[in-house]
Image 1 (cartoon, one colour):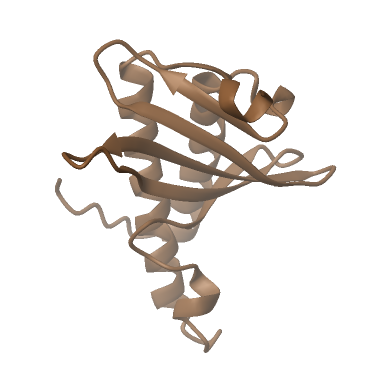
Image 2: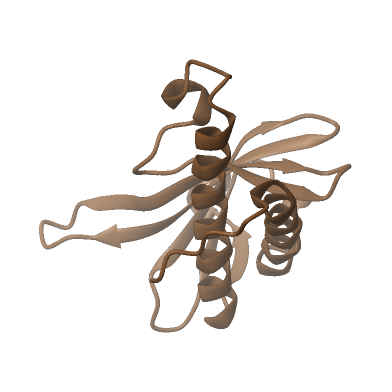
Length: 149
């Protein structure tokens, strides 16, 4: 994938987070109804797993991941993207993913605003492309039967 590097990342980041919110709700229309977990299925594609980590009146924190099974029959979840969903502002922002820690863990100096913005941009641009992929493959979500039992 080519590297996208917009000139004004703050405006573009807000637009990507708005787009990610819309795409996330299109992918998981019942997102607000799920209590703890849900699974997304698409024919001939790897299962998607949704976990509700935290819920407040104005935000949700969720983790979305694919479930892969290796040759030893062990499951592993990747990319495991942790997303903060701002319900009132209608934004979805990546907090961290399987390969990159959250901004607060990586950047201890808040004065590194350019580096922080670049980091956030990469995380959220990845989510945008991944959501596009998931939407293209027509995933359908339902409550996780194992968690409900």
